[in-house]
Image (cartoon, rainbow, N blue to C red; front, side):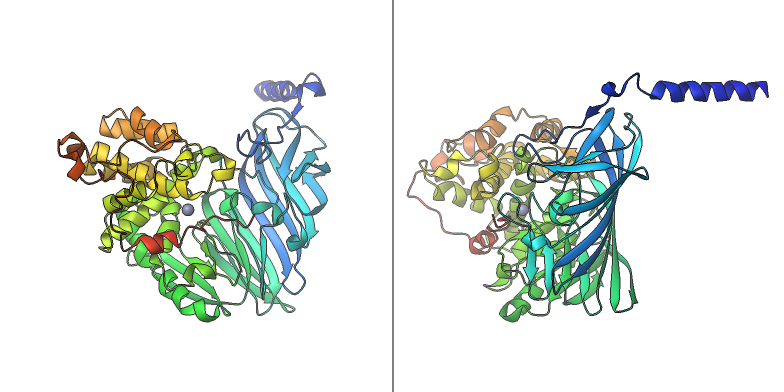
Length: 510
Ligand SMILES: [Zn+2]
């Protein structure tokens, strides 16, 4: 009995200590995650572990109603915190109690809980909302794309604001449950695994689940009428693909590309290691946009990607992101090369595999086809700036940088890095300096000059991505990669046009 009392007293004491001396010890969380490219994106003061997104959507009117439950942990003593969101909110609760809320800026939802949140404490945040997302413009656009029979949310970096409140920055990844009620006859596509459907009174609920950490911009949703194909890859991974029923002339080329997903993801795992997720696939809604996006486990493709026939190269690109971008995610948007340089390089590897031009030939071609005065070389792939984040140079020069790395360390070490990095950093976040340190550790080579030259210098490198042996050769002018003089353009590799057709990839429409 005595002992029991002591324990109680100790508990009471620790409880007492958790209460602040005064409310002024608790500060508001930052309105941004500290990203230099997008200062207001994401927020400070907490981290999210899970989003439960429960929606009702009427395709005829584009009316969306939702309740999102967020599981968060305070990382400081919080008097208030922000979410990023664009629709009208009717109620917010924090740990069951009604919370005060207001909006500020373009997409900030400021939440003041009834009781402040102590550092390290868990919070369950419930947000109720509704709106017509296609009519809600932020920074002049909406990432909610209407289709003839429904809608799609896909965009980078912005897409979450129009369908769920979030800490919208890739540095804070979480698991997701997405459950959507739609009128019977419509379907819902999202990330991960379809765990069930149920129908009642003319409405059908689709429930999707992604159990691995996912960045908010990689969450996607589509409502419409789709032809669905399901299968397993040769290695046993479930595949779920969906095609709008009204793709017209692009329907067959879309299928001839996206139905290769299982084969291509298995092929890529030979380079990148085991596929990190428990489902894979793609969907092609009837949107008027031109881009594709590596939405986690379920790639978004615009039909225009297939307007000139099948394109397996774009499928390879988006699937490569499942390792480089989705499983290993950016800590800050300025490091976009870690995503796009490697996704574009995977297209070079696919070209090599298909005997349509080696990666070296493609790198030489990129190098030679942009003369020194070309603005192409003013973009630094390692820090392109927000306006050039998705410019062609980030992809093409970025992939040449990867080839330069390959030449500097040799094939054996290069392929060890290519596979080891997404394995070691699986489900996490990373920066370019961390990648460089990893590549230096594996190769035993100082790569400072190479990274500076190819990623962080706003000028054309003096020599192309020359293999080390060739660089040492006196006959450098005959070596691969040495065709550097302007006007000596090597023959266009056979794969080049298909690779370039994927270049509207991340044009998010704004
Ligand atoms: Zn990409």
